[in-house]
Image 1 (cartoon, rainbow, N blue to C red):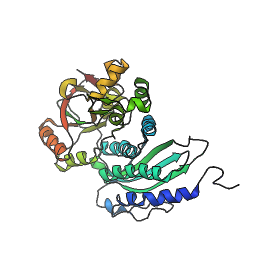
Image 2: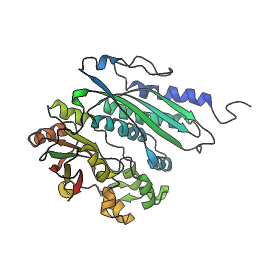
Image 3: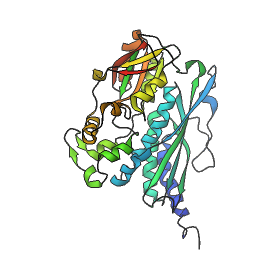
Image 4: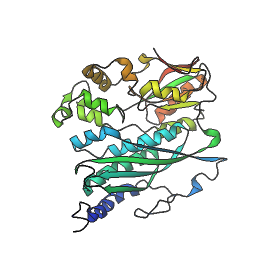
Length: 341
């Protein structure tokens, strides 16, 4: 009896590391001091030593049951982008600049090519956010996960000067809310998605004219990463007063998190186009509109508040970063919360 007979293939683990090296290497920053394969990742503080009060910000998350679609479609090169996005977008919401990322993959059986494909997506997400992939873990856990399934989670660390932390303290009535377009469902609410649509390869392969692609392709589109767009806004000299990453809980849970007591967000639903995938989901699942806005991003992955005088400059900075912005509402005096009208 040996470890391989027990279900853990150490040689497959070695091969996985070898196959993922090129993807990891593409994410390196000058501050990274260690190579892939060590017991830890080292990152120099040179990146932020000139800040007045450098403050570390961190985020951790996974991809959730969206992975079930990746299993069904046997497509594993985009869920890593989702994993990175869920972490670095949260960091960027606080005004932070992502520095490095670590991933954790747990699987029933280590198929090196599949693991390398997953990590290629993680690396792509890191490149999009300028974060170095400095470490990770692939855990082969036979008997815990089915052989063809895995879980994926990540952890990111970023930095911000304390004076630049986005916390909403200067919000005032009349501030403008600007939303950035999402790429679709992103990585939240897939337990409900899987109740709306039959989860089989045949159904996911059906082409929908209104989507312009198959259902599976539309649902598996990776989460947008907004790090560059938020950086572009800051570099344009705009002060972002408050910021919300629209994830699980949709508008009703996430927008109030960017507000202070005595301030209310008013969002106009007709101020931007709702992507077809949400309309299809609402129709096929017979879901109340309020529940849709209470579960999904409905086409806006990030919402920020700026002074009205900075609205035009903010819109242009977001466009310059390759994202699509909309003026979607404003801040008013009132009970902390959000009104959709």
